[in-house]
Length: 209
Image (cartoon, rainbow, N blue to C red; front, side):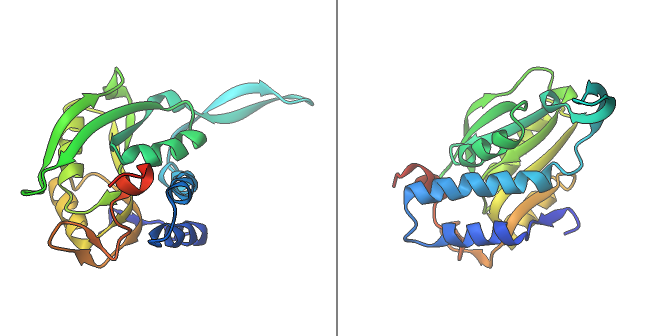
């Protein structure tokens, strides 16, 4: 589990608890997710490389550090990943964005791809994949399989919730990909949902059933 990073900051845990409540409205859930994603971004990007540039303050010239956001790509696993994406872009507005469309077959629980669009020159970029839930792990594994075909410099995976089954599956398939999460819940149920979880993240973000 050395490649699993649990983000246990008090504000992250507080907002996640509010999101879990079944009576949280769509508006409240969406707002909390945006805020939580913003907070998680600070931890996920802690090791981003920086470079020195010359600037002038109101008092004198100096050498200061900046992050090259154009080399960073946030990849959203549609559709629920878009809920995290917005908060992250508020922190790193210069990042590029890719999308992977996947849906889970209700019978086999396997991931089926229907869309894939990435920025150019992926071999020069660091990738952060976002999806609220790492449940069976099938969608995350399928997404990272496809991303590795583009040969990015690095890949990280970010989710709100996961469980031992999802962690084991993703680490087995992609042991080189660090996982960042706000909670590791108890288990999956027979339908592939995380328990205690927070329900279907996509439905709660977009107000659908």
